[in-house]
Length: 357
Image 1 (cartoon, rainbow, N blue to C red):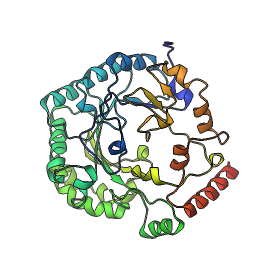
Image 2: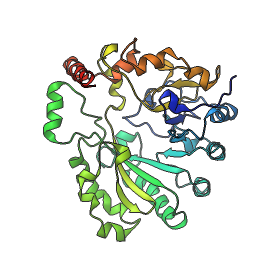
Image 3: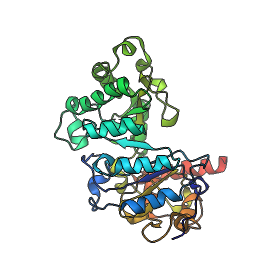
Image 4: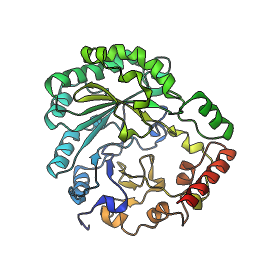
């Protein structure tokens, strides 16, 4: 195989997600994982390291590598070996976890030792829908306590560990916007999470009593939680709610959920995709998207070719990045809407954007 060192940003990607092991300990209603046929595949360690070896750590636009796509990385006994290997190669690592296994001593010790940046996917804070939405026979309070206990310990023993706790929201700015989208046949987000920031914050006010145990002083004096405007739809620009110097709570936009499979597709020549996340599934499939959960939109397999060979002059990727060329039906659905009238409106909106460009 060609082991050429590559700048992923030259292909439009600044994040690499490697699904080392296709297993998860949740079945979230908003996640494609329950629809996956493959829940047992595992990339061997050499295959993963071979991919890591190909990434240029000095690529100025490359953000980080993470070992998840639709899996729970802490289920993989090799996860800390992989994190350490990537770090030793000069790559920044993000550990994304649902938090269920943050009560295990070995996990805590290794996280505190390696200090990868962390994102904990708490997502659903409505007691009424939590168990169903996460596919868990576990109450919200018991689940979240594991996360809070870990954060409390990190706040004491590992203050330089950067932790973000994510909560899901469909980000309809108001009830009027929500009903307008319904009228136009547009998607309104995933039903498992809050419809808009207002409904989310109503639950958050109650939920904050549990969070305050991590740092009572901050929550007694910090009123950022009352300012909904601090939580932008652009996740990267969010300041979030500061729990402590190294822990913050952010709102994660949920636009599609797994309902995308039922969406109506738009024509190929009405959109181009600038998604910046490259995914590699546990079966070796390379995907130009963080929403892909099988080999349907695979660009190729790392079991057969180097990552550079897969990305270089790839016609699928070229078509996806431009308005020209045929797009895969999955991509067309991703840019589509749940109704035919929504698709018509989306096409009109796209034409206006293209003219303005």
